[in-house]
Amino acid sequence: MAQDSAASPGKVPRTARGRETLRKLLDAAAAEFGERGFHEASISGITRRAGTALGSFYTYFDSKDAIFTALVRDMSARVATTAAAAVSEGATGLRREREALVGFLHFAREHKEIYRIIDEAEFADPESYRAHYEGTATRIAARLAEGVQAGIVRHGDQEVRAWAIMGMNVFLGLRYGVWDDSRPVEEIAEVAADLLGEGLNRR
Image 1: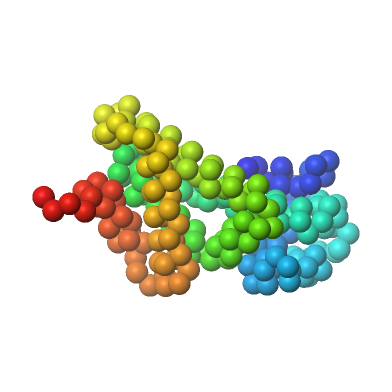
Image 2: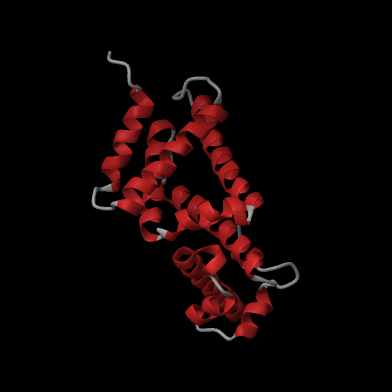
């Protein structure tokens, strides 16, 4: 999602300064919601963290609920962008999934608050919560379908596969991104890729 579309309807910033303020508010909201949770977080806390006036908040958002929704969608878009940027040109199949996971693990380590924010969205904003996971699964399924067309991924139910891979990635991010970030992300991604490529059966 483009940052400009993060603002409430009719409140899209029209200047570079406005876009900068919007970014500050979203980043501050990530810190506020990530630290205090949805119910304890406040608009004044967000503006204080952002270093902006209270009026600036209402220039771009109608309410706390509105900026929370914008934040969930913004973080979801940033996850997608980061994962895509981590994939090297021409990478397909297992290599593509491994590199995307590396990108996601780096993002999880740099933005640990994403787990609390997404988890709280299940109750505070169910629509954005579902959209986050459905969007992620759709992207993974599309990557797998491209691998099939390239002849390096076998045919199968790409939707089920995508949700399985996403579930694995989410919990790897929790374990090795949020709870303990001491192991090299490439090492974690390599183990995951081996599981995807070779399975568990002894050969």
